Image (cartoon, rainbow, N blue to C red; front, side, top):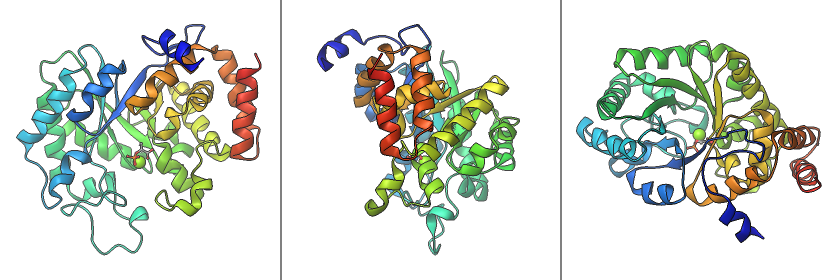
Amino acid sequence: ERRVALAAATGPGATSDGHKVPLLANIGGPGDLPAVLEAGAEGVGLFRTEFLFLDDAAAAPSKDKQIAAYREVLEAFPGGRVVVRVLDAGADKPLGFLTPADEPNPALGVRGLRSLLDHPEVLRTQLEALAEAARGLPVYLAVMAPMVADRQDAAAFAEACREAGLRAKFGAMVEIPSAALRARSILQEVEFLSLGTNDLAQYTFAADRQVGSVARLQDPWQPALLDLIALAAEAARAEGKSCGVCGEAASDPLLACVLTGLGVTSLSMGAAALAYVRAALAGHTLAQCERAAAAARAADSAADARRAARTVLSGE
Ligand code: PEP
Ligand code: MG
């Protein structure tokens, strides 16, 4: 049954009644491109640029090395979109030249955008490298910041993008509950949102994503997480802007339907999940996805939310 569904699932992401949900890929560098192109991704929804920097955590890669890597990725999607995330260092991905060594609680310390605002020259070099890499290419470039907490963070990032002469859309990741709660205010500064559900779950449930014994609380079906996703998606809709998901939640085919029903406008995932998510969306109408989303949010546990969504989506 799965094989039949996969064979039928080619082309852009959409529900069975034609509501488009672009299916994008998460990548860590040019090495991931062959698998992503093979899987038919419509673009890149999350380029985790910190992976380019992990080889040598003592210093940032040169601007030229960055330009070459960015250009290779941008050239792979003529006419498509590529969303590049600026360096997300700290916590689970410490980089010696950015991350303070002596933090008692690195996940709550100087990480993501915070470390870039403390090292404006690193951010500026990266943004200038992106501007240079995109020059003359027919690609829709978007750049987003990780770990945006509030409007002040979003404004500082947008200002840095403008100062670097970047001609791209600027966005904010929603990974901290405060950003979901005040998404409308953040959208006064940036043009799109992207939900990082891995960190959003971690910070919503005070459950370290690296600690297996609290995995129950990291479950992306947790209704509280769905509520925060709905808040961000509704804020984006009210502002006429887009709100994607690039965390692991997007790679669960059933949950992808629920996210679509919550109003999420694009889904980004590892290459291996694309065909399954495409098939799941193609098997349901937008109204069915919306009913599944409402049923999941009415549940009181992750397990019940999953069951409720499955009942709605399989019973029709
Ligand atoms: C996330 O937090 O969901 C996310 C996409 O970013 P990362 O997994 O790289 O922290
Ligand atoms: Mg994250």
